[in-house]
Image 1 (cartoon, rainbow, N blue to C red):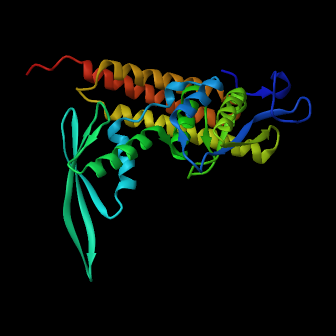
Image 2: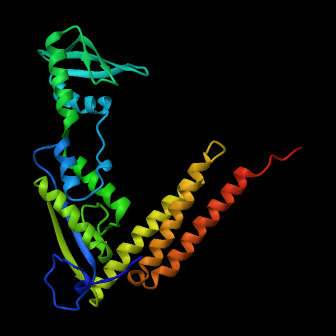
Image 3: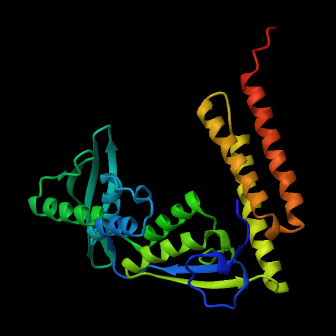
Length: 294
């Protein structure tokens, strides 16, 4: 895996810096707030930017209806009361104020078909309104939805390391500059914005901050692997164990690939990855050991 990229080796670059300037990477942050994005527009933006469309999945009717309920709940309370393999039933309770207290009256029972996305109830007007809101929620994607798509893209194809505990701003190593460019193109088509701040090598504070951010991100990743392994039990499938082993292997490659960024932190991370591998081996041995005969 590439660790550092000399800017002049890239065929295209968004940064105007002196020839030979070496970048550790860049700090990026994005915004996609405002009006919602139509699902077909999100898919088209991903396709036009050469990105994986599968990260933007369609909303299941049940999840879309949960969003629709936010608009339907004006002066009423909506509660799920039953669910089976095909249908979900909701109770609509009208709320009204009578002097110094509130009164509640059963308005109707509404049924959602999870397969077709159709709703039905005894009040035709409410059924029509609920269907309209459900259809709108099925197609619309919020800024938070787009952010989750971006995070999935980087999770599968590049690396983002938070530079603040609350998230929202990330360090992305220089090896992924071209991929960041694609995400920027995608966001631009959705009237969003990606801000990029190059981080040159050789500045003590920049080197230290990058080292700490990357080390913290990889440490958290390794800890997630170890927690997952600790929870494996007799009902854990073999393919789950294989995926866990692959995730740890990929993390080990990341530690190797970012060795120059990590400096002295690499040795500590090497030990942590080795511990995670040992714990997985021990867990597999425990789960596959023949039963002890008394």
